[in-house]
Image 1 (tube, protein in one colour):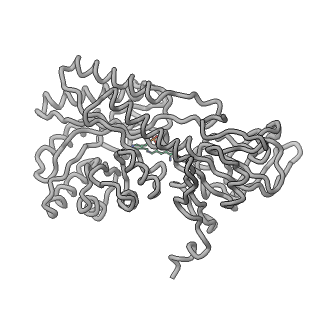
Image 2: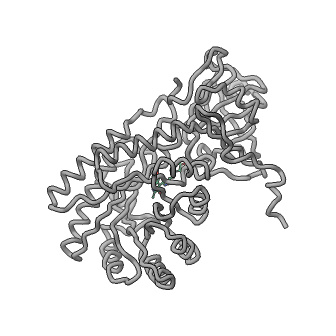
Length: 432
Ligand code: LLP
């Protein structure tokens, strides 16, 4: 196994993905192409659902954050696995619905929903809006009124935690485009406003502290701060919500240097903290939701590329260029995110060639990894970038008019195309 159970090496010295030879996959489906291990995604759904049932019970549930990967086939799986979902745009809602996913099981997010977005979601019968602030609340009340609907909502609250530093350094996320901060008094004001509006039903509160977080503390801190706020507004406003949604953010192992964390254990620790704090404050434990995105799909995915030019610059570094790059995976360009790269054609040869893996775009920053070690590649080798199931296809673009790759789901039962490869005709389809 390499990093995650979906990846291994076979007798031909090739990387395998979900037991299939990556070199054969590349031959059959072309490159670049994204492969997702369907069974790994289903296992993640079951792990999260079991953990929520065990630690919280009742109506508490994991909610898949669709921004990580939003394709119809995935929503079919989520529907079959009885998951809930978080959507951030009519496009994501439409994708879920096209897969038969019940909009009543969707939380609709976003810091700037337009009136049209609000109309769309209300008319589709969305389960909950996660309402960002006063502006949206007033617009939603007006539009829900037009539809004769009393729309269920959660209010997005900024608990003031910077997950990468420490809970005492709170100003970082008070200064955020998301939510209303407790510290400034705006959170309480928005709760008071929501209580007066006839066409919204305030079911509770939401917060989200960040993404790719390995520590448990930011989540337990967030739970603690939110429960104290719930107790505070119970005292000051007479409002006691029944729902607390703690957002997403569990970290995923991209390289050997990242820790392997147990999501189940983390959920248990968050549950213990919630129970302790509720007892201390004398409040009932709310229904708990969390919104994992990355940790449900990242490790199930791999992108296969074909190596093109291999350039050795004496005294500087080596470059291997592949037939994709920032168009299918902009994460290194955007965040310098580290990845595990494998020469899938020579996976059992020594990984002793230090190289930068470059994309095909006309831009020096179009890199997938810098100074990684792989088996010395030759033009035509299949190069795999592991752990690309989340925030890759969903963030892909057509920069340089490069067509986006296909997304294939692999399981024991076979390989299904979730999204076909874009063609040059697709590329021109919107041009008048
Ligand atoms: N809920 C809310 C309200 C969120 O804003 C997010 C992520 C999630 C849930 C899911 O978080 P996750 O479990 O995936 O960490 N493009 C970036 C990640 C942006 C995350 C934005 N919000 C990346 O590629 O790393």
